[in-house]
Image (cartoon, rainbow, N blue to C red):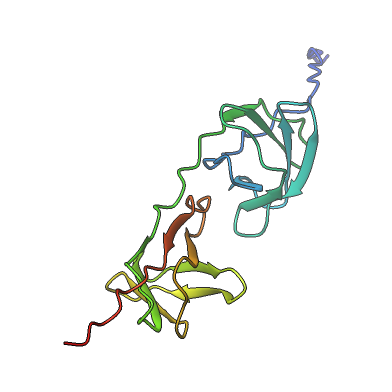
Length: 188
């Protein structure tokens, strides 16, 4: 006679595991996108402070980039990751930081004999120069931080306006310089 072996049947219910949390890179008040890392092939959900949601995909390199409207300083941004066959991850959040504007450029003194406007800015960047009814254009700042633009002769009192543009920063405040009248030469 054989001894009967009995065993208990164990049932394990496999549930959906939470996904891994994504990362969020710093968001500044002038940014129009949220970037970070996650698991390749997963989806990232961004929730803004006002409740609007934006969804994007994590690429093959493990990075995501999701376009959002500009946010005010201190606004909260929450991200979660949804991976295939898993439930949404726990949230990760950050707060928007104030974007520091570009430094203001300088405009050197200009008089009625000058045919160029010169100044200084951040090396290897751009300065926007505007002279009403004359010109409006971007000028390259060289590696030494100097810029110049040919203007031809300018009349006294003409206002020159410039501001600095840098990537990933708000434009600087405008600076202004007025063309100075040279005194008349005296005959002796």
